[in-house]
Length: 40
Image 1 (cartoon, one colour):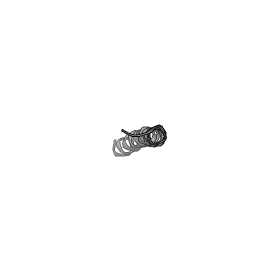
Image 2 (image 1 turned 90 degrees about the horizontal axis):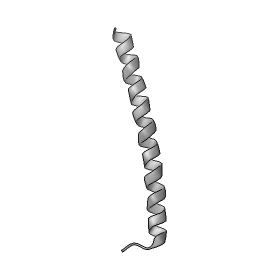
Image 3 (image 1 turned 90 degrees about the vertical axis):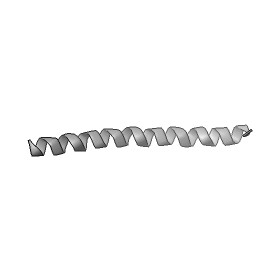
C-alpha cells in the first residue's frame, strides 16, 4: 500500500487534472456554441 506522501502527491495531481478537465469542458462548450451560432 502507498504511504501518505504518495497519497498527497496523487491527490494534488488528481485535483489539478479535475481543474483542467472542468475548464476544458467549458471551453469546448463555448466553442461549440460559437460554431453553431456562426452556422445559423
